[in-house]
Length: 134
Picture 1 (cartoon, rainbow, N blue to C red):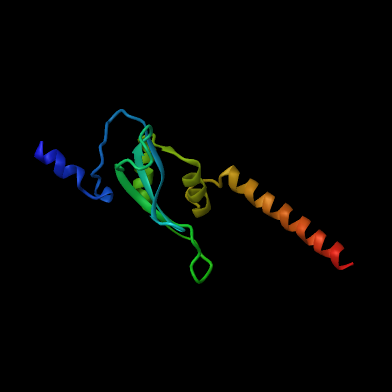
Picture 2: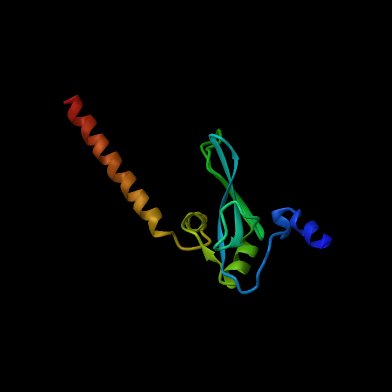
């Protein structure tokens, strides 16, 4: 019993979470950070668990706030992501989009739709500014 308690206190990146062999697993974002300053860990968790549940393993990080160069920073452990995908872990849409943008997977359709909407929005804004100046 004591060894089980020690296992629960291990860090997520060391694989300290509960792992049930046949349970469905999901690769998703777990929010960390402070108010108005989000920071995400890309983790493997049991699919039906709460988002704050202890992860099985941490696979990377994502910082959605732009740095002084205008970049959003992402890090992946691609070998472990391949391993968990081979074990049929399900990717959530945000993680699939990030992996698509990184070139590891094909680009997610939602990324295409977001880019199309942004182009349409810029087009209408430029047309409105042209009509306002004339």
